[in-house]
Length: 405
Image (cartoon, rainbow, N blue to C red):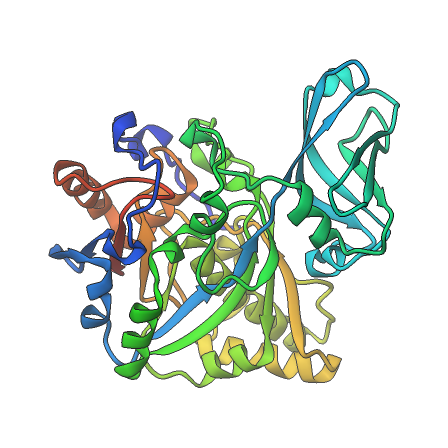
């Protein structure tokens, strides 16, 4: 590991007035404001004008995860309400897509609200579809919850019937019926996120059609956004912050498209960016393992992977992606599943991404650090401009197209 300088959290704070946090999305979605930055503020337009500002040689990469109704509320015989917030599955599989298809039982690591009032008893609820759902704690020492149910329906169906959409805590309001639609991207496909990849909330059919009409390519990755995305940094030196890990899924056609692409690569959202950069480092690990004649054990990208002391020159991103494809051939894999806790902060060198479509993020957050890695010190002028020109912030707020400095 190379020596890293101290990075002070206080250098990445700014004053965000509460009334600048958008409580609801723009209507229609693509009428949110769009700030375009490339070595300075270049334009202020509405989001539906995005296609005019994307070069035709661009590959846009979207995160097609789907937010699940991850908040479950049970009532004890005493009347006490217990909230169970799904985080990570463990049984029958750690792979979220497989657990969502379970039809009898599953276990999840959870956050438990009112946990002191829930000891050993099994909680139950009868759903409108005739299904009875049971929940019990594995032990008082862990937050693993075991679920069982009748009726032969999938766990995904259980959640759609019983769960509640987990809005970001900073919205500080109750969930409304419209949130099931508003807090979901148009192209969401794969159940598993507990927070939306919010940069994608601005896209509408007409924006997607206009982008494709001018020859812009699309690619889709899946990163199941975890609750850790809202975890504040508490350490004064941000390098001491514990990063959450999130599950990623890539299919072979996307990897082939990426390896062959000549032109810009622009992720839609920080989750797509973290996925792409993590993919590169996995390719590096595969290549170096092959050179050493060893076997790579798992696809797990650690927090400071980019700052390891590598034995030789790093590959180009097409070389890294091709190494992954070759590795998948030897394993006969059609799909690649991994985990990442990658931390992107100033000093990071982007290996795949040339720009980013993203919302405006919380002060002192890991995502502000990612923006600072992309823009350098200019991140602050971008945010000062947005604050001075009435942009709306955070999940339901306005958008930006930022090109790498």
